[in-house]
Length: 333
Image (cartoon, rainbow, N blue to C red; front, top):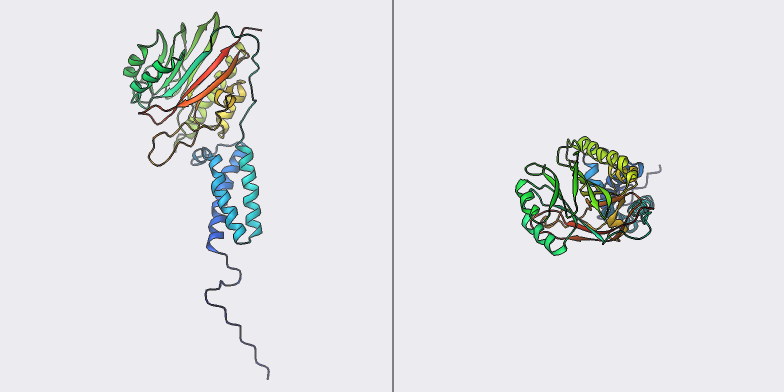
């Protein structure tokens, strides 16, 4: 009678047939999460918490994706390696600058270069340090968010003209100018977003300070609505002459709601045009976590503004870096 052959003994430490290394399983889980975030970027959706927060990390997601690719290659897992390679390529594609490489402005500049500074002083805590920056850099226009009444009084000593929304903590904001200002209506937002018109070299330049709510849990709808207010405001005014929209947008180019602001009003990001694209501005001085997201912007609109340069400045006492942009205002064509 034939007896069944006994199964060969499995070497000690060998995996059961069909088993996967723990590293491959973990890499698959990481890739699944990254795929969900990148997928939202591909379809142009900010979705819900925590997607807006994770979209702020989009360029940095290439790092764990590359690690997963190396794990897959080491494990000779072709499906996982292909998945990681495709995801890495898509992430790199969407990390490119958004929008044109220049503004349509041409012709002779009508005045000296226009210097613009956008800064968040974090509940007024960095007011004195910002005043030192202002005295050193001498900007013509300053857009200050989270500027309480004491902050406005201090910074106002350096400028003859202002337009503000008075408020404590994060709700106060002010536009300061060496040029005459005509204050305009503020947008109906939870934090101050004042508007004004500046008279510069005989030209009217419309100004809007941006400070929508951040996409905190339970506040994503408010964040989208307030970025929508900025989008609609820019669309109304961008065809009427030069337009500047500057401040803390609490959004990067990887957020659909911010790209809509750029696209609807023919606005251009000064940092992108000046070669400072993807320079992180937040969170500054946050312990071991370095700045990773550019959420502070100076946007230029109309056909009469061009960008000479832009640089980010460290301001002690706040979790934001300030953005200094040098612009040219051109003669009307």
